[in-house]
Length: 79
Image (tube, rainbow, N blue to C red; front, top):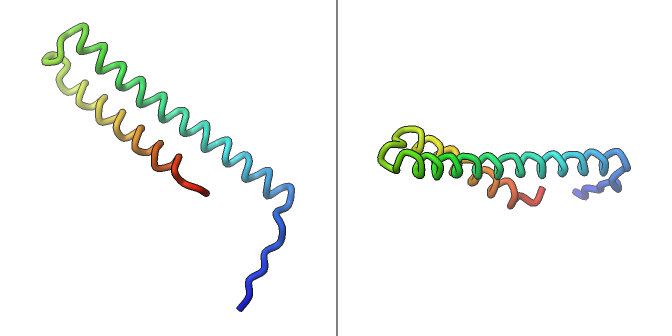
């Protein structure tokens, strides 16, 4: 069984380009989110001391980890 594919049309290439742009924008947003969460944890530690940040620091650290991991996995995808 042979599978033949037709060459990509201009419309298909345009959709792929838009999808790529959307992925890049999404990744940039996730990296920015991770950075903001890390900054919040640092600022809390400076203002209140590490022991006083409590649950907020833990949640911000977890959020940064999730955003960072998601971005890294998606950035490694070839398609």
